[in-house]
Amino acid sequence: MFAFIADFFKGRPKEETKPNIKGVSGTSAKTERTIHYDAHLIETLKNDHSKLVDLYGKLWDEGYSMKDFKRLSSLIAEFKASFQSHLLKENVKFYVYLEQSLSDDLHTLQVVKDFRSDMNDIANAVIQFCKKYQHQAFTDEMEQEFERDYIKIGEVLTRRVSMEENELYLLYQPE
Image 1 (tube, rainbow, N blue to C red):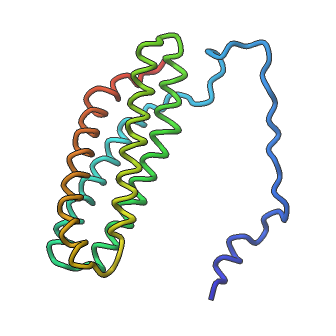
Image 2: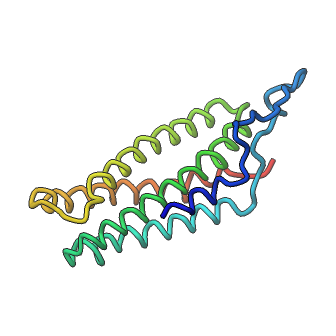
């Protein structure tokens, strides 16, 4: 029944090995790059936004408004996975790069850090929304709360996507 799990782990070392990481001495933090510019990153992040907007609309159109809570649950799971994947890309590739490249511009660096902190708060709210409503059956109370919560999450995400695409992503430039 769970043979796929055994197949996945087959051939892996029994003990976890630690990577051999060597420190760099005598160099400044500015020259130590862990993330490099990716010419396609902004396009990828914008495509993620489009996919998330599409999925968000389907939550209502194909799930909630049809009272198809099984479909809604499936769409919420897909939305959550896509959202988390987007956040990982943004956190690892985008924000780390900006923080490295803006290390000499303390004012702009602080703005970027504030954006990142705000996004973490938004992410927590979205994940809580997904967890709350990722059920195949809704109580009357959940049905009443869903519309309010759905609208609130949509407003926050719309503002955030607009700010990212029209302001924040402009900072992502090759050095």
